[in-house]
Image 1 (spheres, rainbow, N blue to C red):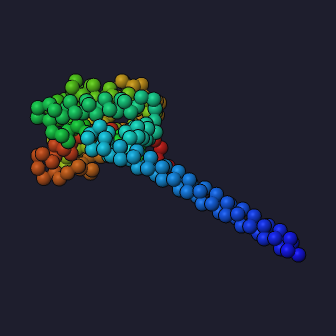
Image 2 (tube, rainbow, N blue to C red):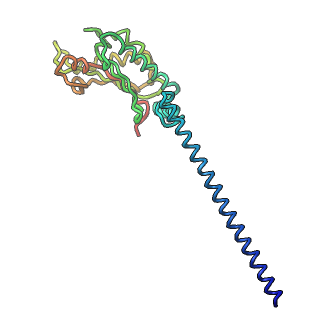
Length: 239
């Protein structure tokens, strides 16, 4: 009987040791999992901190991630489509800056912008830049920019809508603001078409007369801003 009790006691001690070993093993496993998680978090924090530091020194656009500039470029490329379209868009922006730097040229006389939601590129060109007074021929200084605009339209394969605009002053003679706005838009459209060639059926012309002003027509400065031609390139179909 004594030997039997001693054997049972020995068995109980073995089971207790085994349970303790399993418990310690689980605790160690949980500890290593926790350490690994902390290391991953630290790594991410260091990456974000590095991007923020570089961004604050102007080495990267923004100040959040080392991948920010690449992500922005990839996003823009996906929006406007067509190989090399983004590079041509950047070249067009430089041409706009060149025009804006010329004497007697206001910032609003030449503008180009990209809508990253719709993929539309909008170009605004003041009449006084496009045409000499009383002439229906495009000024030579606009040729480089118009070439870039035509190339963007060709590469992206998007639709091009050219719209002429006037101020609200009545014209002398029989011609109306409707006729003048359509005529000016048509001249620019034909110039773009001659540079292209653009895809068949992808270019449209319209005249808005004085019904879509950028600003008030109460001053000569305001009227000058309203006399313009706008080129809208739809590089991406709106869903």
